[in-house]
Length: 297
Image 1 (cartoon, one colour):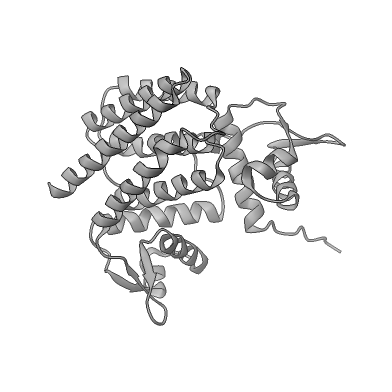
Image 2 (cartoon, rainbow, N blue to C red; image 1 turned 90 degrees about the vertical axis):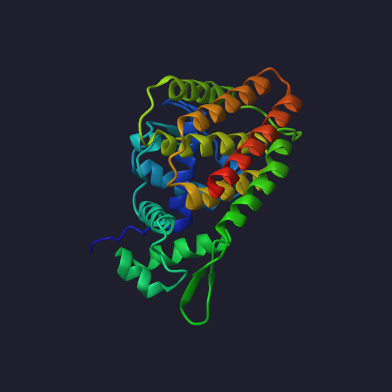
């Protein structure tokens, strides 16, 4: 009789992906010891899903079990450096991006049904439902009677409100009592920013900066030691990715943002949290002002 291997739950698969991302951002090397209790604390989950996620990573050869001593890192797959994750996550990410692109081109109707979206994009029902729920949580779409959906009107106002929220939140996250800068990440981030700042400008580089920018703000949120803040910043980045992720920022705007990021990093590394918070407020205020100018143009 052939034994059937149980399929991993969505929580386990998602947690495994988040653990991989965490390890990559932390810059750990093979042999790094993964502590279950630490992972439970970092991701705010119990031991059961952590053990399930580690078992998945072990099956993929990413981590290696040591009897009585937990797991150690064997290798980090190249997908962490930028390739799309497998399975449902990749399908969801592709559909999210495709829907955002169609909306940005103003070729998506304001109201639609789930079936219409499935036919138009050739997407699976589960993928469509998960992404629509995600967009609903972000306040970008809402349900209509029956199986209908509608985009929330006035995306310019939504983006403006997002900036207002971030100006209240992100400077304060740098002043949290539990804030601890990940210096290894900070060094990698500086190198990445400087490389982008110096490279010859090409069409599409402004669009590519979205990923660098999102990672910068999300990582600082994680350094705050406050999981609620980290999740809030992540959600705002998802909202921005949908609304303006297709935008190709001009070189001057990207270079200005890079310079702001480098100043914030330098202040944090020097131990000047108050200065870093002030720089963050200035950075977000300037970004909001530029966004309003772009919309008015």
